[in-house]
Length: 269
Image (cartoon, rainbow, N blue to C red; front, side, top):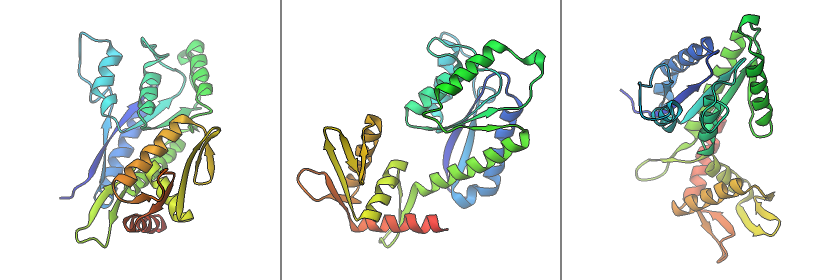
């Protein structure tokens, strides 16, 4: 018996994707069999074809959002020739699920298939909508493409392992305490700690043209809000401390240095 953190993975795709959905499930199940007890991570699969029950009195997409999307920690999305059926708010159910998931600050990995398609299965209107969506996310999303099933398997296997590494890194065990304590960190909190370890002090100074963070000028308001949230959280938990009354200069505490050492040790493995 072992204890593990469970992360719900929702598989998102239009109706022309079937083989890749099954492959994604198999890869997640296999990863659990080989790695869960060593990494203390379990991936639980969510999908309309395995977890959703029949419902009434609400729009089908709203029902799926409530049953699946709200529970999802990670989305795996796969597209081929179709974007999918429009919903009341978005160009397709898949687009709605991805967009709302990302808006909650959660991770989505998106794949586009370049496999050949039989002419009788090709819908030019759907394909154009898919290309328009792909173009619309180019500046904000790092997606991947594949041309064969084997290439897709390799991409997904690698990405699942990288995500597992990120999740494991986000839970650092603080050593040298009377009782070992496991603390969870967000990706943004880890970013702040790394910068502070490198520079010994963090500057977070708001100015007219933007805000300086670790020597960089940041103008994106969402990014600034996430950084400020991370700083507040780290300060509340005693890993960093403000060094002036304006609270725009911060130092690591002794506990903060120990956490940074743990991060370094993990990344060297």
